[in-house]
Image (tube, rainbow, N blue to C red):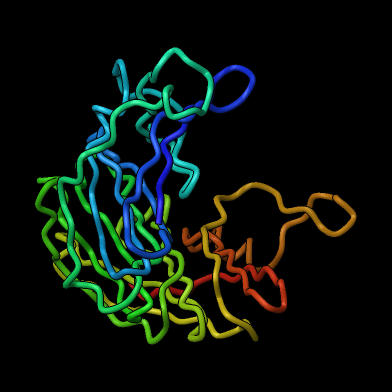
Length: 259
């Protein structure tokens, strides 16, 4: 039910704030790509929220830092503003609580499992995935009033979403009991459709991301290039890497997405 905001400091982590954000388990969190003070959360209580985290911190600094760990794209990710000077995690060292600026409990009919802001500069688009088997696209130009633009049914609960690092219209989804899917959005993100499915997993599909090139290594640690990797490089559609739960398997496959 709780969310914690922490900062990496020399020698460890510093907790800046911790608050009860939802009524049930929190499944997903994501920083806004464009407003460094906005944090999105999704929960098993069917609620999608946005939080203003400015007041959690004693000082704010400019957006700098490393690529977003979710999609690995080279665009910068908002860094967490500087917090209290204390390095402890006690209640006295925590700053004020964030303010909820948006809360939607009507759109998703089941838990909100994954939140994926678009990496492309100027695209105020965010995708959510839910147990209700739908992927949704939101216009986040007004953080306090995100607007639903499009949705598509993947036939399974959507546990993970990842935007393609080079093709901004493509979205990879891990759809639990219905395998995996590649979705394509229209140029203005007002439409969304499934363009390919993958059912190679024999268990629940929980993880999904894009392979971004470079040499693969075989089981002996030697560099190699698989047939799928070669095909991905020639079609300009990178390998999809997906994982399943009970059998603990990682699959690499090359989506053949129609133009």
